[in-house]
Length: 392
Image 1 (tube, rainbow, N blue to C red):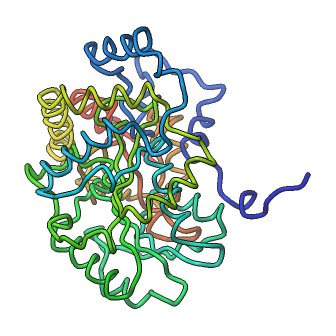
Image 2 (tube, one colour):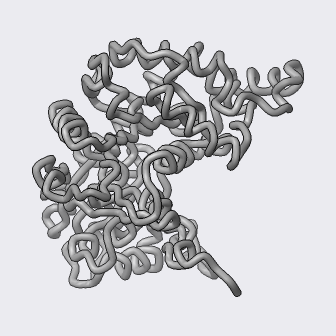
């Protein structure tokens, strides 16, 4: 069988791999499975949004047709207004493309920046789909290790830049660690990227669950922001639209012209139903989203508050925020072995740090990601109790 070697050498999707650990297994009512492997809400969108979506299906015939490659103009306008309000910016629809999810936003952005043999700097632990896309394109993912605080160091990044470096990609609030990058750190990376003539990609999928009440950084207060900064965003987590795949890219109009080529070739246009839902959400769900943010922040706090018994057993809470807690375990076994043992012995499905770090990375072998979007404070405490009881 003929295969593209770049694709063949790309690792399997981690969430799908973890789901295969459940095959042939059953879980008792006394110890039901707690699935903290995927960072996605399991509840549907709020009922009023679903009603608006039903109306779009029944009453707006254009919902079923091809739409603009860069997305509905009304959604682009509304998102520009939202960004300006959120960040104190002055962007317009001419800076925005709507994409089929934030993963496609990253793929489209990288397609405009890098060719096979080029490289993009990714702090580790990294978001595995970013690494996978770079691998598929023959683009080197240059791993930038983070310290105990899980924050990347701009000076270390500067030392890694080569003539083949095209971008630095940051995720904040971070997936997988939950850590929020301070505004001055984000600015320092922008300054580095600008000085070295490369792009700064900032994936803000979880921006609506940031603990900061205001703008999390000041990048868009710079009138020349689009010479360096490319922001990625997702409606999927904020409005529970994961199945409808709606994301965005914020960048210069010139880069959008190149992104349009990619999007027209891959999907022709983003699905219109999800776009109508996102537009309705931006216009109507500010109060609801504020409550969702409070709930997610309370879950993060429940993780912190309940962690002491685990700490006494040698575990460490390395990062906690947005949808995630990132743990360091005390066992001699590798985290990929631990994760599978937790399925069998504790009925917990979590992802090992080996899925977020380069092959052979010793830190990843000691780490575990817990995504708590799907469990409330009671569920978090139950999961913590099971980890405390786990013996190896």
